[in-house]
Length: 184
Image 1: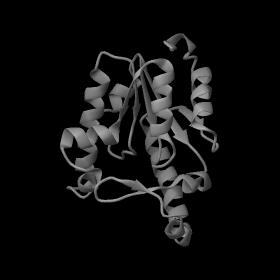
Image 2: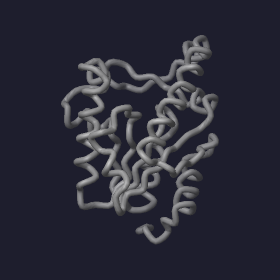
Image 3: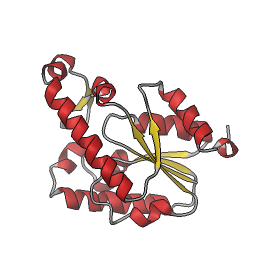
Image 4: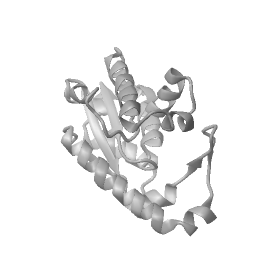
C-alpha cells in the first residue's frame, strides 16, 4: 500500500507521515528529502533553479519512481502545482491519497523558516511582525492547492484541527480502515 500525504507547507505532512509510517510498519519518504538527495542540492538552491514547472516535473518524476517501488510506504508530498508527471499514479490500486489541511491560524502557529543550508529555525518576532502577509499567503496556498488536489482526484481529506500528530495518525488509521495494515 502507498499512502500519499498532500497539503500546504507547515500543515504537518512530514511529522504525521513519519509517525503513520512507523505505526503501520511502512517505509517513510519525504519528497523534500528525496529531492535533496537525488538532485544533490539544498532545497533553497532547488527552489531558485529554473521555474516552477521544471521543479514540479522533477518532483513528479521522483513521486512516480517512489510509487513504483515494491514496498508499503507513506510519502509526504511537497505542494505541487504541475501534476502531469504522476497524476495517473495516485488513483491506482493500493494507493491512498489524502490531503491534510488546517486553518490558516493553526498553520501560521506552526510556521518555521529555513536558511540557505536547509537548517530549520523559528523567528517568532519576525513571523508575528509580518502576520498579515503570512496569513494571506497561507490562505492563498490553501485555496490554490486545494483546487489542484481536487482536480487530480484527491477526495480524502483530514482536518488536522491543531491536533497532536499522534492523534491525527490514529484518526487516519481509523477513518481509512488501516488497522489490517498494522504491522506493529
